[in-house]
Length: 206
Image 1 (cartoon, rainbow, N blue to C red):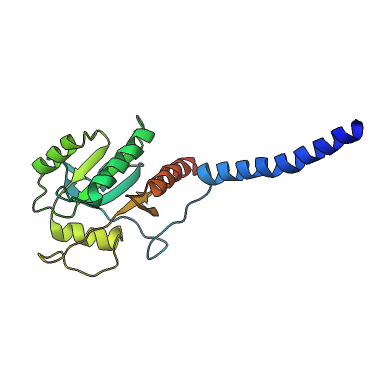
Image 2 (image 1 turned 180 degrees about the vertical axis):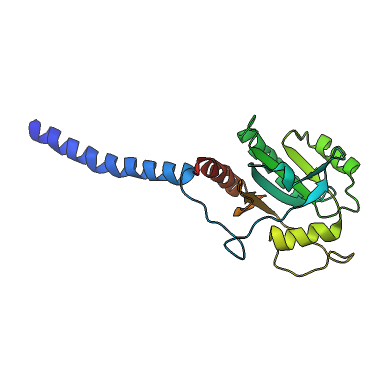
């Protein structure tokens, strides 16, 4: 009996130890692991900007302070990826309900049609809680320059003129020092779940 008990104990340890180790490693990677710092240079930061939100208020990097920021670029008349991205941003907001250190920004790439009033209507349509979520509009040239050079959501060139158009499914994760820490497909539930985990990692960074 003792021999059989020893065999079962050995088998249990052989199976349990790897499983426990895997669980610990996974928990560490999901909540504590370090995210890369992205950009053209190691000192890349989101440049200072100021736009107008859905309430007609000036909002921009001055309001970020030491917040973690998630940003996407959308337009209110978009029939395809933008509604999916908005719903997934709501999922992120709900995951951190009551957290004053997380800020969401949705910047319109069609500012000529997306006035502050139109963005307020969009926020109402999707029942968006705007206490820590700004829908932003402004100069098309400024927004397109920002999207390309600062947030780097596209690699194409353009001048922000009438024929220039940017459409991206990317969500950008920005840390408290205004550094880019990740890009995610905002239409993918899997990648949005990863974004939620990565926000937790940033919160655990020292």
